[in-house]
Length: 259
Image: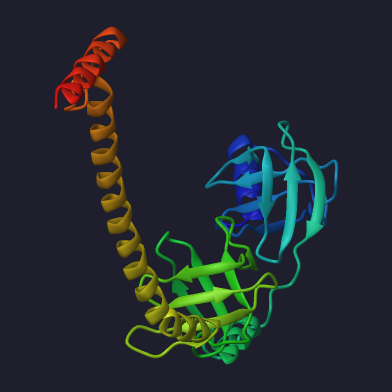
């Protein structure tokens, strides 16, 4: 039942007569499937009241925006009065499979997509992530933005390095040799490997020497402390007073005279 039929039925139920004058008014169908009308004019206009057509009733439209199948957006206030009207932007034409030209273009671009270990969605233009491509991340709002500088690891184990311009400078796929900055870094690590090993050995030797020197120092320190605490020691030759020495000298002279 359309709006005119609904109104005719209401008129009949209320035994109203409009004479020979036939009323015309605008009707349309919303994207939700409901039929609406202004019940007063051939066109929808700001200031008119909007009604939802029922089986045999006209109900004031609820406050908010109502979009018709033609793309006309009718905004009504709490009194169901139209306060704004605007036409939606036409959608991109669809192909035979029902997909828009924009979606077709995205398919042709062959975007690479992946999920990082933290759950962030990333993508780049190309069949696979490669050095020189721009890397993008999807925000929670669904917006595509430039990936931040640094190293990013996907759930599948792909390691991607990005510079400050969002450009991929290194890629390492699982079980494959890396390329770009990652490859250079791996080569540097390999070259520094022997040097790192030598430094570790030298550090161990220095540590052993330090322990030995500390032990020797402790032993010398203990010997010195013991020497300081020991009693004074005299010579084996008996010490005598000056008087005793003189008397011995006199006795020696007398002995020599008697000879």
